[in-house]
Image (cartoon, rainbow, N blue to C red; front, side, top):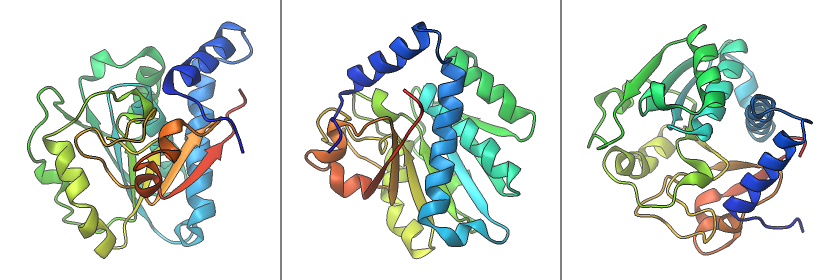
Length: 222
């Protein structure tokens, strides 16, 4: 069994690798996005065929940056990709900002306020069918409960299941504490969780296994 890491230990591993000069943050983000895309197509072989549609939910940090990479990679495969950013793009960290700009060269972003979060987002009432929902909202960085619009995401899970939409969580389902596996207010259940380098404590503890479903570890070269 691989070592289980806390969120802080994972950040330290990434920072150590970057400071060593062996890899850049942008390279790690690119590898993380590729790891998610590879895991999605390995898990759901049928998604590799025909015209497909994805909705990618990006948060205001580096987890959102991973989401922009995933969106770009899916679009390169011919997918119709709709991207939502929750937060002010001006406040994105440098690597996430770089991938936000890269995505904007090939697609559009619907920007939504995050503070305070809206109670509902009419554009996400699922008027059209889609195949994949990418949860790249907060990842391991979430340490406090989230509410408002994000509660809606969690509550619409049954509707997504009825429509055959697969949900992939980037690193950890939003709303799940990566150190304890506890739900922070509410959480978005995933059908597949793709984490990086090593599993985190929250994947295995408390409600983690229930909300992560299948957990895949992607090697990003750390």
